[in-house]
View (cartoon, protein in one colour):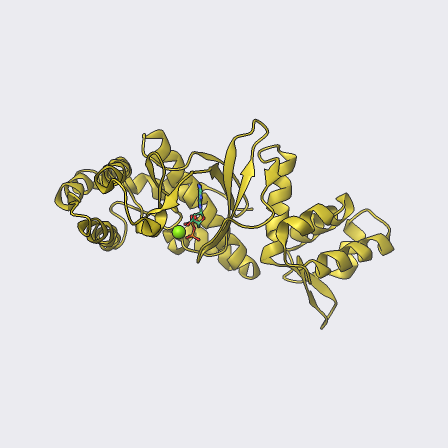
Length: 306
Ligand SMILES: Nc1ncnc2c1ncn2[C@@H]1O[C@H](COP(=O)(O)OP(=O)(O)O)[C@@H](O)[C@H]1O
Ligand SMILES: [Mg+2]
């Protein structure tokens, strides 16, 4: 089995992609989509469809089930291919790096390019980390499509990340520019630089000022990052805060815990370099904006997933 997303993507024919898309639609009703139905729906000759299924399976985009009937299920890699294909067809992305530039605990990130030559990061979400997965509209959706729970959770992660990036970016915070999202994938501006945790020398005061600026913008909008650490700060000419899918709205359950942890993490890090983070001031900013988080729940909960 070949498990390289990009290499395999370029091997796929129009027909292979069509068959994969048919199976995706079939998942609305089946966890394993019956092979009989796939051959019926795909509008190709039966042997051709079976040949595509074989290829998709070989590349790791499908899982097979034999009993009580022969059926097929799309893997995480298969959804990656569908999202990548949509982004290419929509001309949001025209190039993608052959291998990932970052493999985090909850995602796989590739470098890419838009038609105008703008360098982007393409983030394929792997985990369900959004606070909004505990909200009723999402839970009832997942209850209706139990077999798609994981798929929906990764999509919610992407949506939540895109949502926060958009607001903080527009508010003037230093975050990657959000360009678009599809399924569980977010496309954003590529940030040149090195993660803060790798940095042993530099102007730490200047870096801290950038981070404080971005935190201030986010908090005033009602957004708590929720996983702030030197791993999620990229230092170039300016310093950018990345990795936002787990953000929580101010005022939301336990948000103080997340906020306190974020602030402790960076305060502790910068203290090593004799740079102080104005924790109390940021907490005050948060208290003053506490009411602004609630509206996000309504906005996110209104969004549909399929
Ligand atoms: N916009 C970006 N520009 C450049 N590199 C990025 C960008 N976004 C992510 N990366 C790289 O990918 C890694 C993982 O991305 P991140 O958003 O932190 O996801 P995870 O939740 O998996 O940690 C980062 O540590 C970084 O090296
Ligand atoms: Mg990260």
